[in-house]
Image (cartoon, rainbow, N blue to C red; front, side, top):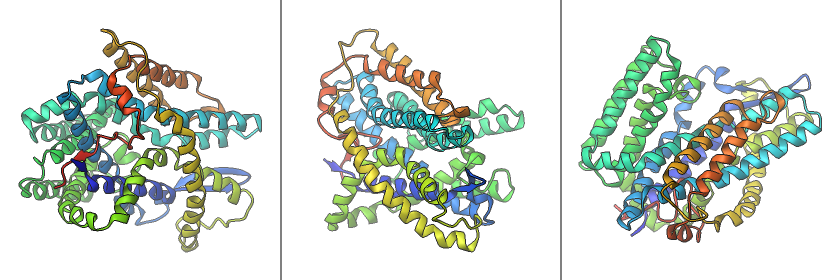
Length: 441
């Protein structure tokens, strides 16, 4: 049993797409003594098509389904139950998130004392928190993995097929009747469908025979073409049009992306063993993915404040030729700030690696407490993703308290032998030491 190197490669490529995609598409401006921000795709005629290159979140959920299915099957075979497995995976995501949230709140407090205008503080707080939407969705899928994996084992690819149908019906009803709240069900149906494809990738039911991948690509391609050409859905795959909540057009796009990614697996996997330096790079980079995801907006705020406010960097019109000419310099500056920042954060997080996922003695109440903790933590994270760390220029005390109490409840569901074992090594993003383990194809 060895790590699936292709899964590691996909995570590294995906996080690169997230970072540089956000750095390109979120354009910070400084005018009249105030920092602001715009979506670059609104200023470039063909910019919305570029979002197809940077929409890589389906890859994260695909790999997440792969590693969660592998991990749950392995742990279940060893007799581990739902509570310790979910607790362990949730805590490995929430501790680094807690570090990030504490840092953000400290910065907000300092900025308030320094007299930063509330509008600028709110913008910086929102920009620093908007990517947290991913965590409550993924935590929900972790909690549901045992049930969804059992459904996969019984009904196979019929499960994501029916989830896709459900996502389409939700789109029709939510849009046709203007019931926006119903649309949020697609956070589970769309991302959950891709997560199910990860199960099917892990046990090869999606890739064997290979014609299933061609069917997936064809079906997704036809639907996506219809949706785009009829203007039923927006072209851009990054932004509120297709992602908040996720649309059936995004799922069609994900089907094409998933099929192409998995078609390339045999060729790429065969080449990786002959490149040991690349493999070592992938192994090390996977340890950083969660940290990179959480902190990648921070350099934008630092560089914008340091170089735009002081006038060191010019500010050509967004989407102009000069603006594109300065993008490489912008990327270099952000990378130069980000690399040491990640190193410092990893050092600061090191004590958390050894902490067990739970404390105290587990009891009959542990599953209920875990559910309460997950609900509170997800509610807090969702609110932060919408409002930011400084809505109206103030710290969202109730929202932060919900997250903190949720994390505390999760940890207090008890400690098991597995918790001690998993605390002995640095976890991967979206998984642990045993999460991405499988036979090489």
